Image (cartoon, rainbow, N blue to C red; front, side):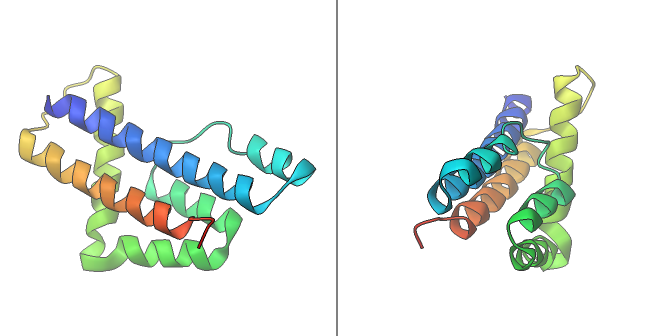
Length: 127
């Protein structure tokens, strides 16, 4: 069950990020600009910290900076957990031995939720 939690948590984060970005583009643009913007968001990448910062930077450098600061708080706890979540998900998906236990899976899942919540709040097109 721990392995499943890691895979699903990382998948949730990946989907939340891309849906937030798509929703923002859909609300804030129209016509050809919307179509162009959405084509860049057809496929998502692994939600590694650097990839998420890069995606936010395409919207706004200040947002990317705020997110980087968010990840760096508390001794970079979230950045470390996010790296671990993606790494473990990839190992599990490729059938490698990962040795994740219940407590670690719950910790990684919580970190993924925190990051997803930040994205949902930051890219809320209705605020």
